Length: 293
Image 1 (cartoon, one colour):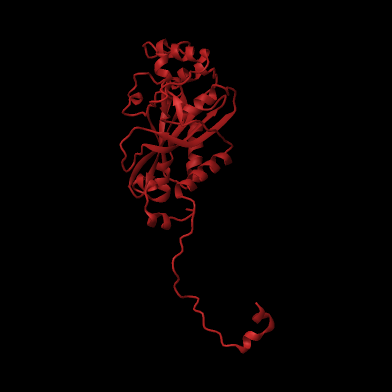
Image 2 (tube, rainbow, N blue to C red):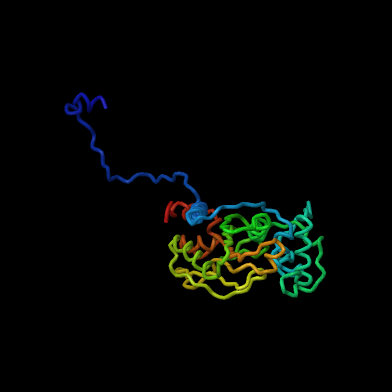
């Protein structure tokens, strides 16, 4: 700076500096692409007027399955699909009023007009501790203490499935979960909500296909076209909670619900054809992936 201020630089011979000369690559630290997408998902839901909720990774089978009208002999509850804890093996059930209502709903339908599943419900089975298989366990628990509309909550958190790891399946992944409670909400409102959410992510080809889930009716799935795989992939399951789910919690209004894997969304966003890349150690891919898509 002194040479420039005094003007002495005019009397000196300065070496030429090639501003176009190649330089060694620099790899500064940056946020992982998946964490960027998680942040974007949260920001979009908050922009849409939702409130975020969180819950424990370990849940009782009661909240993970029973409260969602999933029978105790359902294949998804077997050890081939769900991770059960060895120590401690069991947890506490909620207050007796809710437990009794859920039990009777499973056995005979209770006050819902349903016939239930027609078996003897076991509290011991419901006490078993599991690594939650979906974050719906947190939303139904939230509904047990928040009953009056309007309610708009979401969750983006880890879940666990005892599945074989493949190019499109993981044993541990993130789920995007949400519910909307309103006096006159319909499945059409749910489709519009999800269309808005995924469009904000830049996904244009979205369709809704009929589907089946034990705790929603009607049910559907949101699918998006993956340009690299050249086929449609599932983004989330969706529907309206059944009376057998709502009545035991004391909910008297329609509830829209959805849940899906965040990593599937990341595959489209990042142009991946193998979901395992998100958790791999390919430094080349991590360095090439831009901070913002």
